[in-house]
Amino acid sequence: MRRIIWLDVRAVLLCVLCSLYTGCATGTDLRSVSPPDTTIRQEAVQFPGVDGLLKGELFLPVRGSAVAARHPAVVLMHGCGGMYTNRGRLTERHRDWAQRFATWGFVALLVDSLGSRGLGSLCELQKRPIQPWEERTRDAYATLDYLAARPDVDRQNVFVMGWSHGGSTVLGVVRADAPGLRGDGPRFKAAIAYYPGCERPLRAQHYRPTIPLLMQHGMADDWVPATPCAALASRLQGQGFAVATILYPEAHHGFDTPGSPVRFLPRVYNPASPGGRGAHVGTNEPARLKAIEDTRRFVERYMTR
Image 1 (cartoon, rainbow, N blue to C red):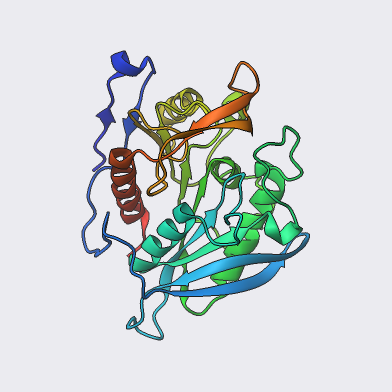
Image 2: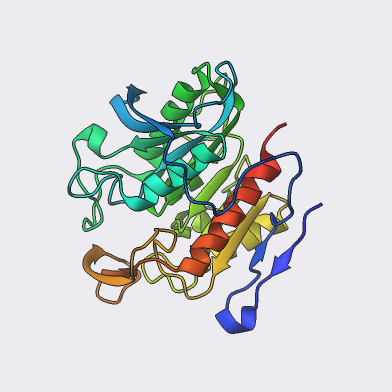
């Protein structure tokens, strides 16, 4: 049974904030906030996209799992800065989450929408060469096709999750008319969006998600404000859709990145800022740990046994 939690709207001046997915599922050994297992296998992969080869980093469940077993899977969509640091290493947020999903028994695939196209960070650009609801949504479905064809993946249990620009992509992926979605192709099981931009679906009169959707946002986010996502969830819940927004007090953009003190980035493009530039990013540890648990519960709820 769903248990609805109403957050304190007096404190945050937001309407109808809730979590529909906090009930615990049974028959699972998913772990919540335990450190990622460093024995997890990682592979670089390439697979066909709509406009060329897509590159990715594949994380496989720990050794010792049955060789013939089919695992649930998750497609992970990076933010505007891409998957990698300036030194070419996976950022801590991406590695942390991919390893965690693999520890939970998932095949986790981080797809590189930027590097695959020879692009660098988009965060300082007002006009961006690839868009969440267009090219990146197609990337998500190309990645789904690749995973669904793997013998170690349970194609009935493939989730999608993204952050910021990738979170906005997730909001595009869940539409019935999403580019890249084929009538005879595989489907995502459910979707998770960390601090997405919700203005576009909020403005769209006929926006309808086709699968369960969880949006997770920081209340102190001054780059991608949480209020539109709360309003979107409220509207869609009223129409009977399985959508929820969980807001985390005092959490900024990127709050789930481990070990990253809050700092101000003066050059990033930010239409929410009076000057159009600058935003705070960084870890909020209580919110990070709570968000991991909320994500785990959501996945448990919708995974087919």
